[in-house]
Length: 445
Image 1 (spheres, rainbow, N blue to C red):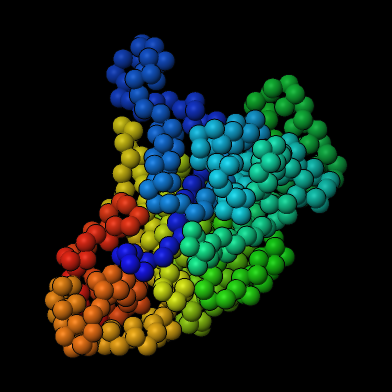
Image 2 (image 1 turned 90 degrees about the vertical axis):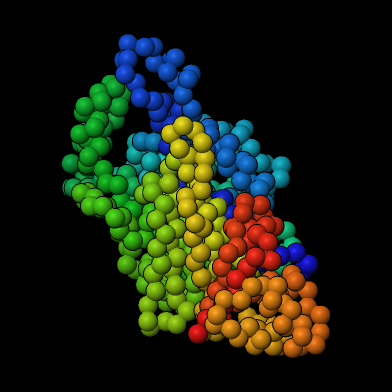
């Protein structure tokens, strides 16, 4: 490797879009004259949804995106036309490129707002049928990325074909739209009344009757079992990632609702930890971008890394998975982009670095030559990179390329062996760590 920077797989993570709401949303403006024609205000104000898409397109080229993750709620309130319109928008805008992207590299899951509750048959146990319109929205473009059952899996490699990730989409909206468990006669009455209210455009009656439907998030245990079986067979070099709509941990504010969280979240969490390897759990639903890590002392390598994306009009995430020279996953850099009310885009503070490799097993990461080089990084006091390079040349008696040492230090940083300071995490793919000449290296105790 002659350039500075580790092998990566780059992912674009897009959260809830709510396309019908976004295109009709009132513009962000401090309106002091309500008599002014609203269309003029809209013409003078930024379209935040479009600005976010435009920035995502820039990022696509900038970070050489390998994978696109769409975490549901493309529409609002079960509006199937809105879902179709959103799919068309994503394709026409270039976010989904039917000519360049493979179906393996694009994953989409349903959100609770994507389900048309009128399609829920209270007398049927076919919980998959209500997702058929969503499948058709993609199939019409001959881009069949919507799961045929309650989960979908594919393997994607980066441009070097050296590093790979296993993508698993899980449907967490199976229970969305089901009716309360009333006796059959009551259920039939409620369904008939809901159909009547819908036909009569009786909004008040429909709102009341819809309260009898449950927004019930859950994951199929069989789908989870099948997905985890695939993950369990993976070699250590392939990093598993689960994409779903709902969060695994409760949100950070009280939500007063009959079923506010994933019904079987505890089961899902326990089963993921039982795999005893780091798993990325990527989702939406919260409209906020928290990053949370779940672990257990019972399993040394168990770690569930939960990453949420904001509303698309507010921003999106870029995930950079970095791999060692031996092809093992090291860590994930999360870059969170936000769209300001004035339409400008920026990153939110420092990049979030989440370690995937286990520092207790750091020896697995390095070959004999690399281990010998790291033995010469002994100073617990800060040492400039050029000074360290020169000292290693002198003590080892052989020439060491600058890029070789720099990349080894980047691996050692993920492994918790050294700390690196004074490097700039710049925007471009190749220069994310800046000029290594200015790095400050320190051996960690």
